[in-house]
Image (cartoon, rainbow, N blue to C red; front, side, top):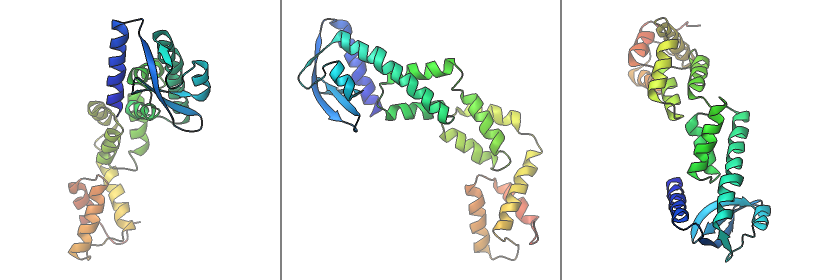
Length: 230
């Protein structure tokens, strides 16, 4: 969907460059919610505006839209709005770049304005994937398996090489003992003991594997597990 919108905006920019005096026709206006409307130009989705902005720019189905007004809406009104939206999102919680792009795309901002907004917040260091990954790993490394953390960050759009670099920096050989301790505590919660039948043991192993622990650490913890684990 977003790729289609991007192509439409690229085609429109090309048309504007080839004929700077061309006027576009507002083909439809569709209510998005009580405050906002989707505007269609020449039969294609163009952008989202507030109802007051529709009145300001005399945007009604059948009306013409000049190139100058179109450029003002895209380059001034929506450009500023996308940047403010990005800032407001980051004030509430930390995002990775991909997460923030996805949130802005949900607001139906054109891709070029999403790029501008991302560059803007990056310039003020409000958006930093390395900082996000470092903080995430530091907070979760005593609670989750290394593989689970890597998968979590990858799912959030963090570059795999960046994840690997920070993992190598923050983890040390002793952290294998941390994972064994985590597994042992989970085994205790599951009331594991060596007298369990094979089927129950397999269920517990599958549970631990889903949490990202390695088979070697799981087996090691099980072999050294006793019913009175604290």
